[in-house]
Amino acid sequence: MLEARGFKPNFLITMTNDKLNRIQRRRSWAEPYKIKVVEPLKLTTRAEREQAIAQAGYNTFLLRSEDVYIDLLTDSGTSAMSDYQWAGMMLGDEAYAGSKNFYFLEATIQKYYGYQYIVPTHQGRGAENILSQILIKPGDYIPGNMYFTTTRLHQELAGGTFVDVIIDEAHDATSLHPFKGNVDLQKLTDLIEQVGAERIPYISVAGTVNMAGGQPISMANLRAVYQLAQTHGIRVILDATRAVENAYFIQRQEEGYNQEAIATILREFCSYTDGCTMSGKKDALVNIGGWLALNDDDIYEEARNRVVIYEGLHTYGGMAGRDMEAMGRGIEESVQDDHIRARVGQVEYLGQKLLDWHIPVVVPIGGHAIYLDAKRFLPHISQDEFAAQRLAAELYLEAGIRTMERGIVSAGRNKETGDNYYPELELVRLTIPRRVYTQAHMDLTAEAVEEVYYNRDRLGGLKMVYEPKYLRFFQARFELL
Ligand SMILES: Cc1ncc(COP(=O)(O)O)c(C=O)c1O
Figure (spheres, rainbow, N blue to C red):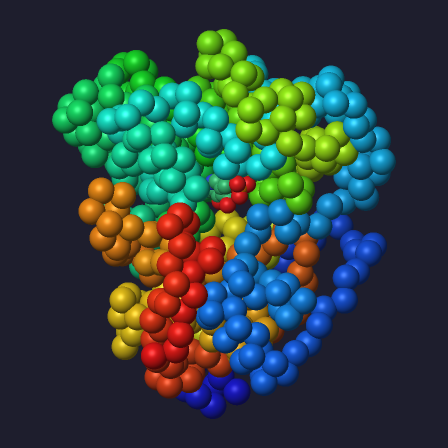
């Protein structure tokens, strides 16, 4: 089918014989698990999908999950748990206070992430809320390696202003920089000189960087950020949501780390930060949960006070005992080298397929998702007509595949001027849940993307007809132009 359309796989065009031989000799990775329980998927007709997406206002967040065939909306809370985790669920100690599962979770986080104090929260944004309230004063600036939606909103609600200090390459979907999540130390230094260190409560560093395409930050860069921060008395707070995936890229790509275990790399990585917020719904292989981790007694004391207001007592933070047990066990599994190699391997399998078919995606392929570059995919649809939002809707129409916009809708508006942000990256994220789909699902997904790409000239844009005040991408509604 593809050959007939004039496609020639990339590697056949560009590879030398030597490289081809090497690829043919390469051994495949395979999942280090087998399937014990299955969940049936529903197939829908095109007519049913047309009705469903129109009812959802062309917003994939507003679809009902039972109308979706392959759900690549997010990797958040969508992992398949192992038998070890499910067995742990039966050991839930549901006491209001002092659950034994909390102490197990606390010890596990201390062991693998290395922080001293742990405050459990129902998910990542619970931790972001508490941390932002404690550390940020009105008028403060928070530099970071690209914004994340909920993180920036909590910083703004606390009176702060987020400042992007990621390297320029991160905003270029075609740049092959191996660590596009790196902080630009010059941009950071300039900001410190401009506003003064006392107005920067912390540097917000994410590994990997979701909005840049799941791109990693290098160990050397984080170490340098930490050193610079220390000379100015500024804290570094890690968004550790996908730090294990980040550790995998360090192991594979950074000099001096390819003989180190993922668990060792993760510990060193976190040691260059003063604390972290965490959405356990990603790396930690659970459907709900998160935490705030700190090394500073005073901030911990304040966080323990505040968690009671927003999340629950400091020994459950909005989670059931069984959920804390499953998360602790999930952390143990997440740092296994064979797990993480297969996890990122599956993402790369899909990404390579699309690259071979010359479909414009963000490169290098990131840790948790493939990002279609809507600016190159649909060059005839402007950002004001929501190219990525339209593309996400079309993938659903084509094959029942649910994805997510990561462009102008997600970027929202400037809190001072009310103007739309126009991010360089106008993307559709195909996020791969952990341990859920098979290689055949990836093949089908790639074919659906290719079909939409082939017919791309027929697509028009959208207009927004309802815009919520906060995090508009979740609930905004659109109509076809
Ligand atoms: C990088 C990053 N930080 C923070 C969050 C927020 O976590 P949660 O969805 O658990 O509130 C997410 C997930 O959406 C994320 O991807």
